Image 1 (cartoon, helix red, strand yellow):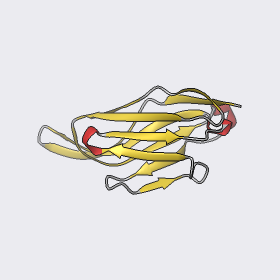
Image 2: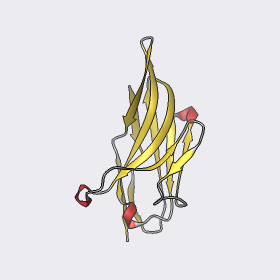
Image 3: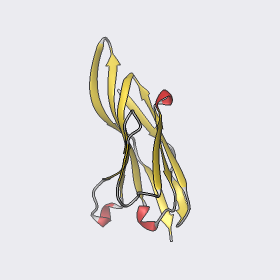
Length: 126
């Protein structure tokens, strides 16, 4: 199995910056894509949305709402993905989740799976 542990989020003023990290551990053979998703307050009715994704080769993809403000990166040697968030807006307030497509190796078997972190709260005040 794979465990994803996210860094603590926090409270930041609009226009500020915050960096999230997510470290993967476990019986990892290789990690393919890693990504960050977010979900605003359940009362908003919004579903979990993709914020940014990065392949093992470094190709990236961003939601239109964060392009130019957020940067995703990864350290393959450490199985860690980062999300640098700049020029934060109140509408960025959400629980942010780390996600990984990983191949697990254990007991002579390998299998692919998709894994989620526990989520970390980011709150941007106006």
